[in-house]
Length: 278
Image (cartoon, rainbow, N blue to C red; front, side):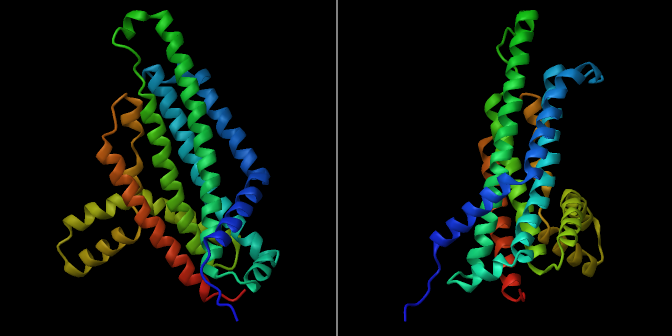
């Protein structure tokens, strides 16, 4: 009898099928169209930027669209793709074959993360093209303002896109953990959005931890701050919009930080899913 071993090939097949299923979903197409429209609308709304420089306004508007719709996609798509396998009983068929539950989780995560990469890449390219086109027009209108060259650091815009994709991947991992023990799609989505809010406010817990004198409370706050990732680390949009370069060590630190949480949340999802009855 041949012993079944952990197989990257099976993970690849599950990831590919997950990605193709996600791309076919109307929800993904809807979000892409809406995000695309909102980024383009920044050109129309630039007159209402309340004094902010035009290029910065367009960049901030585009960054906001990427963060908002990317976060929604990360949570909703992950939950839908996971529960579609459970509700359609295809998970039983897959796991009845020589497929480990860890391979199922990793495959689902990689497929969804690939979808988020495509979404983030598309939005980043659209925003970059829009900024380049508008900056070129402004250079013709007022060449004196651009004597030092272009103001927008286009390479850093793609770094911003990479950083946001890493954040979305963490959010995907968090949703996967919740879905692994949840009974309904709706519950997973709602709790994931609550965790998203906590992650954005996590820096407040860190500040509180440094100011609390009562030791048990300090320990509780420290654990809370350690369990939930600090999404404020990924907010580098203001620097990019102002044309400031992102230091390489900052990018590397964010990548390392994100990878640790991605690995941890996937392992937690595997641990939880192994105990689940399907």
